[in-house]
Length: 150
Image (cartoon, rainbow, N blue to C red; front, side, top):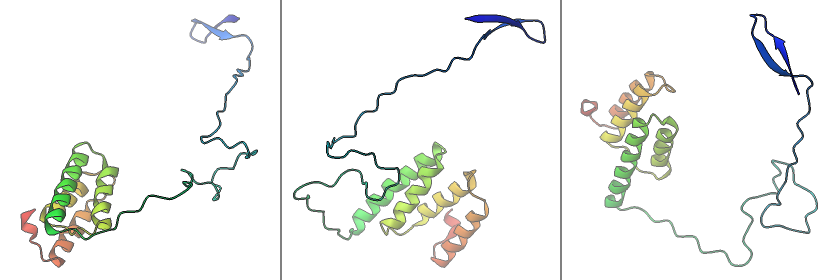
């Protein structure tokens, strides 16, 4: 039920005459896989709770890490350069940073193109200061790569 009240500027508006609590039933579905033996919910952040649950039985063998050949390094570098360029085009600076983390995690050395993308990203990004681009130029000099290629 609504009643009309007049606002300060003379227009009528409809307001509820009483505030009614909006109680809605909520259905909580059990987590999968459902364990009937578990009778209490674990608090958030409980270190004993892991997801996904460990597999019962034999786990699949993990692939052996192998060193990349120079051709594979160049192919991976080209893929990462494409992802970095795409992230810069979309102004996705989180993805841009993750691509450079992937260079580090996979032990792929930077080349002139990588440094150029890093400098341009620092200059275009609103999250990073422009002084980082000068630091990259200094790093290029220490790596004995010509900054004139930028």
